[in-house]
Length: 263
Image (tube, rainbow, N blue to C red; front, side, top):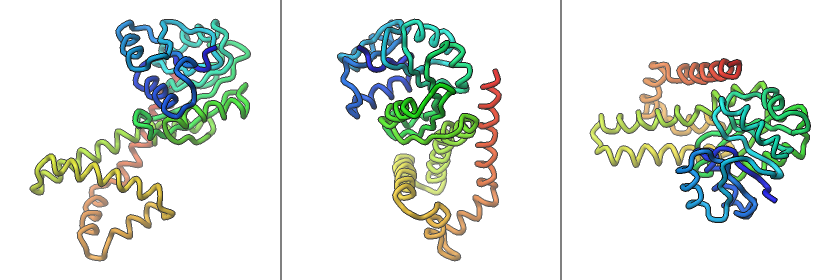
């Protein structure tokens, strides 16, 4: 019996599969990936020996819907026909009501919003249960996403805000990295040196923030000596409206997620 099948063998589906195997969540023979494209099936089969790579859903204890939003209704229909009774969806913008309607009665649905750092096991995801999802279903969904990062539980109406913050957040930070690298070049560093320093600064700062008991504002203040170099740099960032720009970016992405969810 297949414990879990991932419907969609794209980047996030592959990341989940790799994470589940790495974490020992299941043996290869207990997992399956449903992928329509033959060439992609060949790639997945070569990358994950022992995992069933198939072109249509089969009977399984549970399924992850990891297809594009427009393909969700058909994927749900096929999963329901295969007899799956528990589903985790990571399809952006598709609410639990839509999923439950497409799946028909008797299927517990949990909706999630993960992000791309799941590919390297450092994702951030939020989950929300549908009307038929009990605590056991939420725990099941959490166990899957735990394999590729951290998981929080929110109300479904908050998932658009999650999308605006952590779903889109990697792109914001990549833009920060690009900008720091270019700034390093501007002030005279070789590009390769600027890149190494900028990337490690972001990694190290994130690790410090996660492992410290201090709030981000306190850690920022600890780096900022009165009249020093950091104070001068922060003054320019504030004058350029960087803080308000991040606020506006998260708000805009959240609203766009709401619009996509309304079709």
